[in-house]
Amino acid sequence: MIRAGLIRLGASVLGDLLAADAGYAGPRADCAAGHQADFVSYRVKAVDTVLGRVAIRRAWYHCDQCHHGLAPRDGQLQIAGQGMSAGLRKMTARAAAAVPFAAAARLIGELAGITLTGKRAGRRAEADGQAAAAVIEAQAAAVMAGTLALLPAAEPLPGKLYVAIDGTGVPMVAAATEGRPGKSEDGRARTREVKMACAFTQTTTGDDGYPVRDPASSSYLATFAAAADFGVLMAAETRRRGAAQIRQLTILGDGAAWIWNLAAQHFPAATQIVDLFHAREHLHDLANLAARLLAGHRDEWLAERLAELDNGDITALLAAGRDLRFLGSLAGERDKALHYFEVNAHRMRYQHFRALGLFTGSGVVEAGCKSVIGQRLKLSGMRWTEHGATGILTLRCHEASNRWDQIWQQPHHQTPAA
Image (cartoon, rainbow, N blue to C red; front, side, top):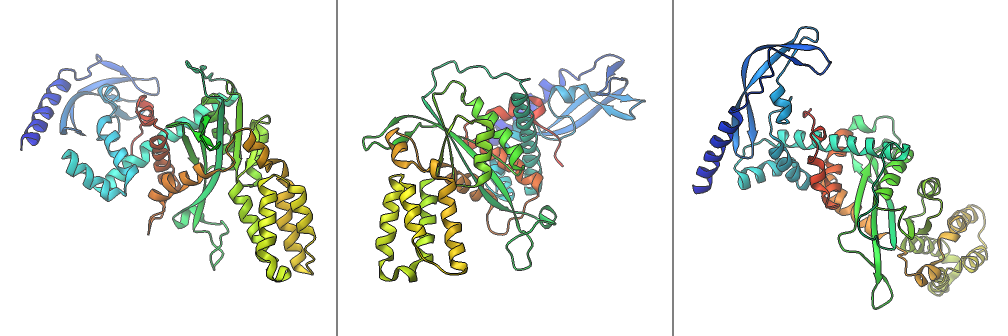
């Protein structure tokens, strides 16, 4: 009861503060198109805030050339075209990024005493996340074009920066996958791939000699964009993290060709490492393919190949693989499996990488795919539009990167909800 009373009192005080300035700019005011809009009257707008609903009386102008009205005060308060204050939008986005929309609305109601519907909370969060994504894309393009310069870090940076890259599918509505081939029985896609990058730094190794990721050093980005556009985002984020000042830049991936094409394009001097655990999975698949041929010696054969892989002796591994005398189509399957190791041999010098104290696994981005994407966008029954999923992905990446407040520092990060 005390809290409810204080909130009502706060809403009353807020209303009085806002009423002190109605935004009257004289008989005429500039409209967005550069015309002169004429003052019409004072009009009242109801806005939901963190203290509840507040009525705002503000000057209203009309542009005869554009045939629309405007209130300069709305722009000052960041409520043009919408009925939520910036504070409530931030609160709503945080809840909706964490849990499904209906649950988010209930949380806001129980914890803050603000009544919202799940649909309104979802639309608001998706719109603000999409707006933040548009800002990130524009800034990345400007960085890569050289029209936006990144200031050097004020403090010395760690010696090693990693960029781990992976992808995962997100369930989509039918319109978002129309015309795309998939793995379902009818050949249609049910998901869209989200490409994710995680950048993190390393300063030390542990007592066991294994590298240790610096605490709170991970930053994430995720997008549905094509590989080329993802590369621009990834490169800009890597530069923001200080790639130009860091001694050792390393790209980690699962062996997909598009990852290494982007690495070579944007950071040709970076060290490239194929995730050791993916490489081991490929060896297990090869051993299973050769199980009958190896009779009762499969496990011993596999153990020898795994040892060669861990030592970075890909030449010996390939020689042992070619000694498997398959016939017909199985020979083609063997050659396909060995091709993976042939093209990635220089990225599999694991003994050398360990001697340098480098990570050889991309587990951090795989964990990101599960925690940042999977735990919110891949729950049972969910189907997303590209617009909505992009918005929530952006919010969750900012949260995981400890950059949440950056979304709300500039007014143009918010747009009216769909």
